[in-house]
Image (cartoon, rainbow, N blue to C red; front, side, top):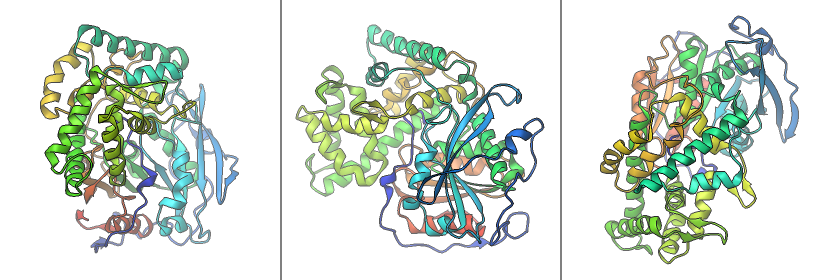
Length: 512
């Protein structure tokens, strides 16, 4: 996502809430029964293979044991799908084997978001996160998309350079600070071009979606079963746009609206995080927390922390100072999950007392920074993909002109979000896509999940995507935090698993 990648937080394991009933169509959209239930799918490629890509769809990966009931393999795909006989790249995937081997439906492909998050890591956690019916009936495959992690990776900066970019002033208000933003953008673009020049034009979402169809063909499923979260919804919707007839059952949770611009996306996220912070402040005040006894008192202290840290960074881990940008990241991260709100309270209290260690720790969790450096390349991939998919930022002057509107929409986070697209200003390759509606005409029903107070993917994005899709079904979760399926809401869980396992498509939109 534009603010920062919106991965699924595995700490979202929670006590299940009360469920709800589901009116459903027990048959798939074409009137036939759900394919594959109670049978073993074939082991070879099934369905149409695009011309020239036969060797990729027909490859037989060497699946090796890499954990309890888990296997890992490397898959080969074209670097450039318009040149299938040219250079290739690798995708690394992890499979969790279905417990009911005789009644296996097929393979459920999962993506945790980002762009840049590891699907392999997500799959490794699937036995702890997913419902028993999914674990029984599906092999579950998570893969690192092209450019990510253990797949052929995007590389741009070393640890010190990435530290400097992430900590750089996110609300420049002097010519020198604006010039530094531009300098950071140029340094990043030059590093990406030098270290990953051949890969950069091909890490866009459309090529990543084409990879999914290769994976579908390899496992022998005639249609795709998929669960994507946050950015993974855009990836899934793009797949449906490219391969509508190959859509089986798709769940898009914490949806991204593909039709909105970077400016619209950033502004909606700024408002979303403001809304989430308001909910935190109200909850905090009702508990008579350490930050005050009223919502306004709590918010005033957060605002003071943000303002003061611009001119006076806080001490952090003994080596790094906690700049305003890191304070913002430390505030935003715990807003993804209500269970993290006590950590946010303690971090703000410490920050006001002059200690930024807790804020820095949460900013580091958000950016996957360990004591030895960054544990993955997600920060770089996020920018690389977004600059390819949403090329509607052309200059520093454009960003400066947009700042007043962002600040009016969100005095707290707006300016930071306005400047968050600066990395795309100097991007070294030609963009491959632009914001547009996705209809996926001719596909089977696609389930779109939205949470009413989701800060990272605001609820209206889910409404937008569900209404764009020719056969979209909207499932609304009334609640806080990012994404719905792993939130502990039993209604959502029942709807999703009934759809994926039994093929029960709700007859109308559902509220949980």
